[in-house]
Length: 404
Image (cartoon, rainbow, N blue to C red):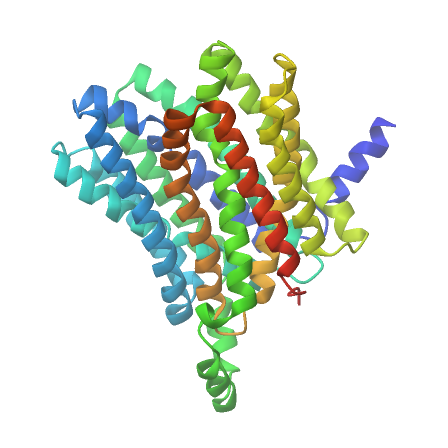
């Protein structure tokens, strides 16, 4: 029985290209290296003595830079190709993280954080375009899932490593290690990933180039923009897990940070062990991607209504199970649809719009969530958040079949 389970698990990773595996390793190195981010607010308040209001502005700058970087990354990828954008983004991000430690005034940090994220997040649209290049219809969703596993594993290890560095060295060491890991990721990238774009461009004739120019702008693709709206709402609802939900755990259920960490880690562990086999099974059954996203939206939405049931601490576990299953199915398939919807020559712009949806969700979800809690309390906030999830669920029925 155990052998059969192991065989099925590892079979779900079969037929992925060599380049996809390398991109996953590079993503893991990069995400494990983003140790500064979880400790940024503590660093700003305790080390630089910034007020909470100033920290709030800096975090807004962080989110704004992410939005600009996603948009810019798409434009640059369409113009120069994913290879140049990814390699330059990784290298410059490394240098900028190292430089960040030398800035100590509010305005210099505010501006620097915006530019760091603007450069860092140009990487994301380019990465998805590269994935499309190195995968096919059969492996595309699983390729995205493998990248998600690398991101989750990197994010889970990064804070632990970062905490160790701060305790045994200093915040300065954190910035150095963070920057160096980005530079290492750059070196690995240029050594192992071949630039197939130069080969492809040689085969593109004059007629092909005309076709690329005549493609309509992404914002005029009504079906895709509706899909992006649904993706934004999904991200907005889901991200409450990282912002308002831990406060709910602490204030309503009075559980400590260690217990909160265990609850949140359940999400990462379930994704690591179950997401790839589940996605593989769905692909084998050839179920519509839009249908899978609908089910996911419904699960994510009702997970917040669960909070208002009087069921003790068990409702926290049920909520986490619902929202994790929704995430496991929803996010890989939204990513896959975004990749397959892009016409040739517009991949960067389409993937930029997709990554911007999550950047904007990150920008607004925390602020609005805390405003609602402060104004209406937790119970009403969960009805609002769950209701937004149901709105996205209803809107998903309007999306026509856009898988290619």
